[in-house]
Amino acid sequence: MELTGTIEKRKMQEQFLDMHPLERERGITIKLQPVRMHYSLDSADYILNLIDTPGHVDFYYEVSRSLAAVEGAILLVDATKGIQAQTLSNYNFARQQNLKIIPVINKIDLPNAQVEKTEEEIVSLMGISRPAGENILKISAKMGDGVEKVLRAVIEKIPAPRGEETKPLQALVFDSKFDVYKGIIAYVRIFSGKIKAGDKIRLTVQKADAEAIEVGYFKPELVKADELGVGEIGYVATGLKDISKVRVGDTITETQNYEDSSFPGYEEPKPFVFASFYPRNADDFNYLKESLEKLKLQDSSLHFEASHSDALGPGFRCGFLGMLHAEIVSERLKRDYSLDLIITSPSVEYEIKLKNKNEELKIKSASKMPEADQIETILEPLVEVEILSPVRYLGQIMKLMPEYRANYIETGYLTSEAVILKYRVPLAEIIIDFYDKLKSVSSGFASMNYKFAGFKESDLIRLDILVGGEAVEPFSRIVPRESAYQEGKRVVEKLKELMPPQLFNLPLQAAIGGKIIARETIKARRKDVTGYLYGGDVTRKKKLLEKQKRGKERLKETGRVDIPQEVYLEILKK
Image (cartoon, rainbow, N blue to C red; front, top):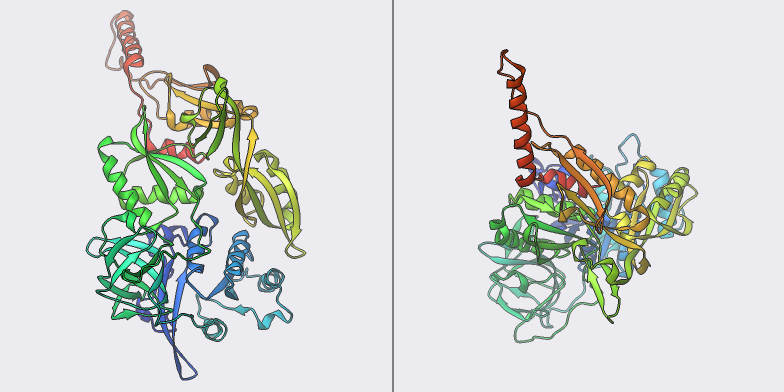
């Protein structure tokens, strides 16, 4: 952006396209971000449209939408880390879309950069003929070294966008956001025809008619234009206020030339992880709904539906692509919309076959699970996990996997030093702390990617956690029968560390059905009620202590235990 003059040098800053504070804090890209650049090469002028996408497995949908809107991809590999599991996944995505791929090694300026090793991995992955050095670009994005070669390679190797201007308008919506004044702003790629402000348009999937209030492109802020033509990436302000009318993956056409044609190869995101969000203050329910709708507009892989809990009141059952996705959404609701939420333990979708009924039940939370005597079989979702790691950590990883009920499939090699392990694992096992443990046993070098692999019958039961004798719904979970005791013991021990003491003894229990399988007690907080006494008969002291004891007994019967949000989040993180 600096080389093409898109951003003035004085305005440049690190992570320029990572607009959200969360992206800057974590050093990751969460949202795709388009930008248009003008560049002159060999006395010819070019317009380049770049979409910066995330790399993490939880945001694969951002990548799949972007790939549907472009002609080529820059496969950027960190020289200090080499190829990661998500690099394999994103490379395969781009191959499926028949895109021209330009491999680039970044961060060559760092002292721990392993350029030759990374080059060998890319050669092996892409099947590039030797000498590899000519085909793989080596750059330092921070210092600017070699970046001009990337611009030249993009212009020389990536084909210009195809399309016919004389045909009716056909534009792919690959992202959207909400603006108070302009309504829903659709991010589009024009495949045929053209669009200008004032044109009547139709969104084909939702069959919604609107008028293009404004059109323009990204620099990376919105810049108004007279019209958008074939091959261009830009935005269309629709003026629509109803968030459900604009869906990512929809097609914009002219009203008079309406054809119900959507673009092929466009994946609808399927949520894997489910958790319920309840506002701590029930009056915030409608505000939570509005906030989720606004987030959904920016993040179409977020799913939610209203739900009600006897203990926590009205809330929403939300579906996510993974735990990082769930964490980012809860953090955004907290920061951007100042919501105080209670979040239930994450779970996956189970299929239950009931006895004496030819009926199948799909449940996403432990609270919806029928009694054990009504259940014939429980099916849980499986995923195929692909782990990419240096060979020296192979033993530690193979020792870790059985703890997560993993079934080994095969071992492959990317290079002589990098191994690819494949396992089939229950999804419920990997959504919480598996990634952290994998990083821990491999000193941070291993990476993982996963895809859905069907359902499997398992021996599962519902585990409840009781605080002060009452079941706390957000802590309920579905666990394998053989590990129920260890899991119950772990949760009550963790709760004992995290829960603030009350003015009375607080029992923490793990239960299966009506049977208690683990217990811890938080001792009562003591107030020195005899501190002001300065002598006299000992019965005075006993009298005060007896009075305190009776008060604690009363409190134990009537007192309510308030569980802080941090406790929910800590237990959720396992």
